[in-house]
Image 1 (cartoon, rainbow, N blue to C red):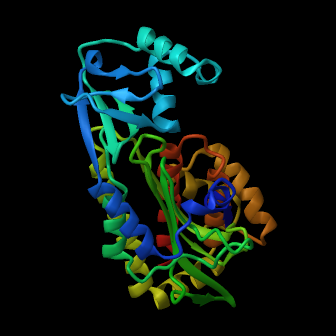
Image 2 (cartoon, rainbow, N blue to C red):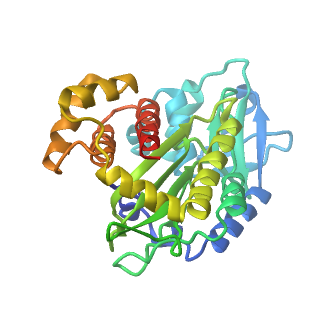
Length: 340
């Protein structure tokens, strides 16, 4: 089993006004933001910065304010350091950006909410609204709730700011006893409408959530993420499948999950390290992970299915790339079928 830190990390970087007390209030806020937002497609030559660092675009030439994120994006497109531009007067800064922003023939995509430009992208970026992601959650996990509030009494696990969204949800009624230990289902979902982070989801079964939203003793961890390119909406189908599978396991396999886990805690994959290595190799588990997993399982008392799955799940958390980690977690998850 492993400790998941994503919700813990979010807790310490979120301001109070980014916290929501319920899924309903978070969803309604994201829906209103979508209704009040629209994209502007403009040629770079038609995008101008005034001396007070407001942006003019469109046929009406009306002025729009930049926020910190869209200003950072403009600096990145211009190839100038944001910190340097911030040290200049507004008049000088606007002149610097005017002279350094690319003026290619490809249009820019501006996301405007009220009179604020929230993001600036090129043609390769595909937006996915936070409300679209939450629609999936509402459809398939309507009875999941946020965990208890953090120790500060403010942070809830449900966050949405000007740059991104993160939601941590659990099923408080989904507990099942396995050899005297309780497990419950939960998941994280995250997204950004402005390109700050990828679309993603992580599902798991856990034993405890502490006051700082560390998720202790998580098992059956599955993760998926997708960049905001042309295929990003296909990622919603993947997340829908992940959450639906988690809920189905909870509904249909509360007893079955306990039965499988009990078998997994006693059934051995082999009598010795050589036999276990052959089984894991057949499942295409990398040899360097097998070697480390054998040692961890041996410390837990033997080469049971659960001990090896637990060890391998813990080891994959150090895999650098999310795609590689997700593929390994899928292979490791298949080992649990040996307990059926």
